[in-house]
Amino acid sequence: MKAYLNYSIFLLLCMMSHLVQSQAADSREQIVNEIQWQLDSLQQTRKFPGATFAVIFPNEEIIKLSTGIADSLHHQKMRPEHRMLSGSNGKTLFIAAILALHEEGLFDLDDRIAKYISDEEWFEELPNSSSITMRMLMNHTSGLEEYYTLGDFMEILKNDPDRAWEPLENISYVLGKDPLFSAGEDWGYADTNYLLLGYIVEKISGKDLYQVVKDKVIRPYELNKTAPSIRRYFDALAVGYSGSFSPFPFEGAIAKDGKLVFNPQFEWTGGGFVSNVKDLATWAKGFYYFYGVSPKTRKEIREGVPAKTGTGHLYGLGVQIRPSEYGYSYGHSGWFPGYLTDAIYIPELDLALSIQFNTDDFKILKESPYSYLMRFAEVIAERYEGF
Image 1 (cartoon, rainbow, N blue to C red):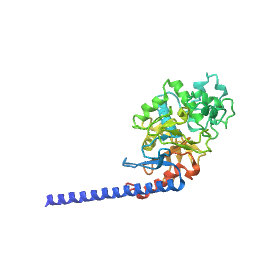
Image 2: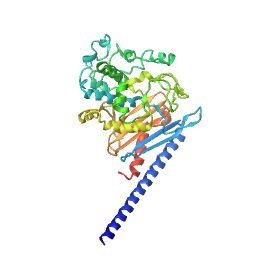
Image 3: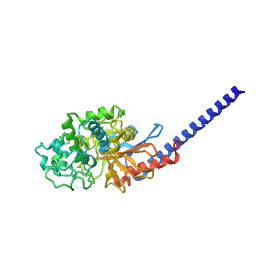
Image 4: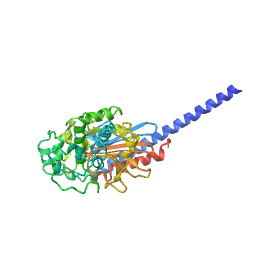
């Protein structure tokens, strides 16, 4: 009798397990179908070239989807594996590497940068030079303005598309300018902050930051499709399409047969990577729990200051902190001529989501990439059986 009872319990457990697995499979299929339908419908009605999307569920299952075209000239369909320039999202990789060096005692977050570069002949010409701290460069409260909109930068880039830029060449565009505001008194987003931060960290560490990123982030997190954007050719690159409103002097297709029309190397610590949505989603969650730093430093990363990117938005150390109906999300958007990216982690749902578009035309998209991610987060929250 006891053996029969045990066998009955075993059968019941098997049936329950099968039922749970069946429900989970139905849930997954519903999510895939709904998001794919929305992606296709939005692409067809709004006429953007293409997009890729990925989500990592709490059980680490990954869904990757795509829509539209990767190359109109060759009539190539977009695939989830296609890579794109990820723009400022790359700041998250660099800040992780830099904070890992901070963890080793290289510098303190509230050190004034004068401690490390006051011997540079150009130092006194740097706006707010004596009052900027390392933390201010990381959270964009230094008062420095964006370099690439100044002087003859765009003209040189257009006339010499193969040129490789030194960080100090780009930083020089802000020298002698008035600061946007007193250091620490306001917020103003500028890649200049990260170029200067990268220059300082390489100077005092003697290490190449791309190599540090490779050692601390890319290898440990197996971001196999993420690479430095330091050349003009990349395999599996979707062609980006840039609108006429862009400050960069390139309109239309930004690449041909995998080769960009200009060298993206100048971006460096302001972004500096090519990637795909699987890697972006993997790292969005990885950065939130980044084990290369202490819990204390992870807390510092998430201590945001008010940012001017949207209502209730904050900016931490290399991370955008944005409100949603599911609590704050943590991640970073990215813009590069011809491409738009966003990747986030939502702790309340334990979801990592990423999206890339091979256009930089917000008018076509009609809403931000972040809004697209929130659309799909809602689909998942309503249908995922694992919550």
